[in-house]
Amino acid sequence: MDVKYKKNGRSLTVFVYGELDECSASNAKNILDSLILDNPNSNKVVFDLSGVSFMDSTGIGLLIGRYKKLKERSIPSYIKGASFSTEKVIELAGLYSIMPKI
Image (tube, rainbow, N blue to C red; front, side):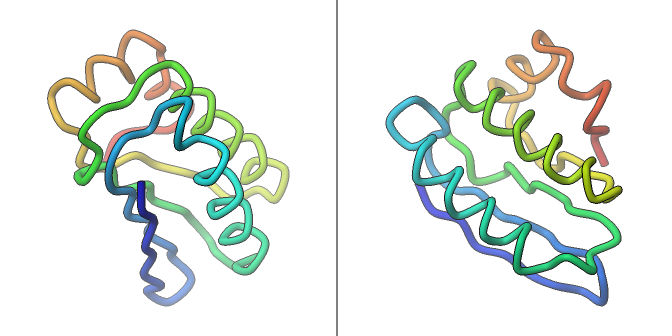
């Protein structure tokens, strides 16, 4: 699992690559939390999941946790680029209701 990011003005896009599962969640959590703390002036955060090859319920929990951290700071979060299989997991979990797809 790898995470990269790009800032465009006050918008932060986080690119996630690999698998979002129990094995990678702890590392991903640390990286994403650092990005959130290091960019307090962001006006939105977009999680680009186009590089995610697999995601299970642990990945959903990871995204919900980051959503909560961003919400505490009044920063909206969005999901972009999920593959067909990843999108099915997101839809079943109802994640798009709190993190809209763009």
